[in-house]
Image (cartoon, rainbow, N blue to C red; front, side):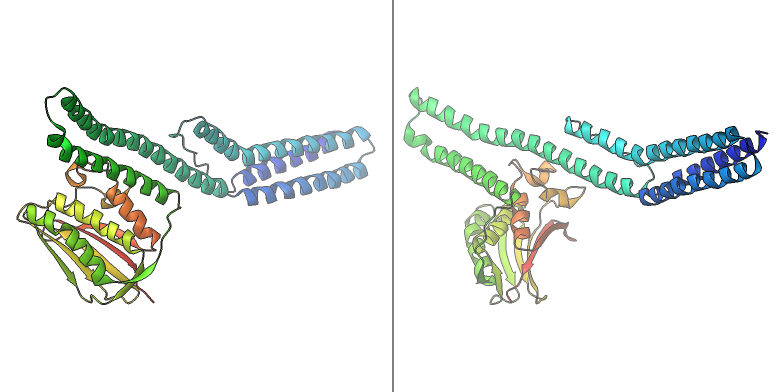
Length: 357
């Protein structure tokens, strides 16, 4: 007499398990949720229908209770399994977030095959990678800044001790002491400007300036150094009277940083050239080319990373802030900057900024 109830119960159980398994294979939380809602609605409906059939065929209340109780257990089990399937990816992501918050910046969220959580995990992993890079850059900045501050301070201390001991006179060391103070001031100014750029607090006083005036100012500032080092410095401008809208002192700073970098890596019989192109009416292209050893192997864009010095052969002994500052100033003008190797040897650092309307 209880056989019909067992058959109905087994059928409902089989349908519930198959439906639960099918819903768990869905690759979206949205579709899993819809499937769970449909299962939660249709399974009780099947229970009611099956109970009605059993009640019609049998007068035993025990059989009816068995069918109702069994299908209720199946519905509850299916709901628990579906809920675990939906929450498991979120639990994994939460655990990874706790690891990152605890200081483990190498922790990464796992891909679970669910589209929404995989997209979230991808964004989370990108954030974690950026945080790791930022903390690494901060450690490198402290190391480099400490080294570059310690060197001139040690030189100043040695010179002061020599003067105090009567080994030398103040007049003898005064020019060198002034040079070390200037070096310290330049490093502090670089750190402050880069911090301003990173904080998006850079204030630009835009003005319409002739391209020729910008380049002439920079060339005059480096003619003496280039002549002393035996390097030919020249400027090539297709339209000197063309106008660009910018903060003149900031763009001059960019070109000066690029010129310092180019002169540092150009041999005594080499050439450094500033070229300006206005072929594109929407923007002006500035480039600084040298005939030095060229760029190091690897990604040239890393030369512009904040606090990244890259290869010592290209970046020199400084804190590696010049190119990072140059990129920040160019991007603040709505432009872009890049570095490439020249076909005939040497390197080219080029940037574009919008032309005046």
